[in-house]
Length: 199
Image 1 (cartoon, helix red, strand yellow):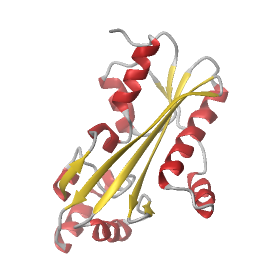
Image 2 (image 1 turned 180 degrees about the horizontal axis):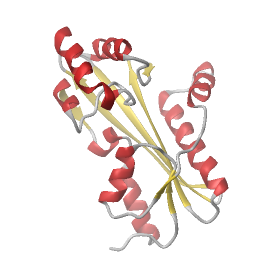
Image 3 (image 1 turned 60 degrees about the horizontal axis):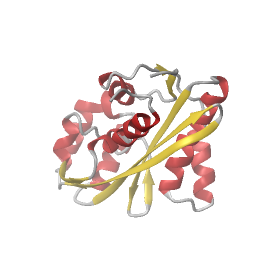
Image 4 (image 1 turned 120 degrees about the vertical axis):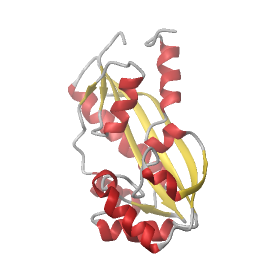
């Protein structure tokens, strides 16, 4: 990368994707009140897609304003089920309740990414994945949450497909990177076209 690249997210999986693709970067999580912003947007009947995009943009903008000259990537992911947004679970009981709500049905993950430079947006993309969760038993769901709580407690939908969570699903339609929380191939294509990445 010819210029400094900052990931404005504390997500370990997003940082790992950048590391594995040999993209030098610095991690500076943006401090924004996601719950307040989301509540305000939902009160205005904003769609989940727009909420994900707005949160990603606010993270990128906040960090970009403090780091002139750097490329700053903001990301956010939301889960939509039957028109309702689900959030990260507050505790094990809420995780179990969310998985009961999702099992045997389809839901969507919307992964937004916005790239900023000098306080201005350069690029944005929202990837969507449709997933169908199998009919897991109450006992399996409870045991799954107990076994994986430390890993899934910060995961929207209470699962990670790169771990045991994959066993919860019968069908996935879309890009695997979008499930992980970043439209990664689209980002790499943009950076390549800009001349930031070697070809």
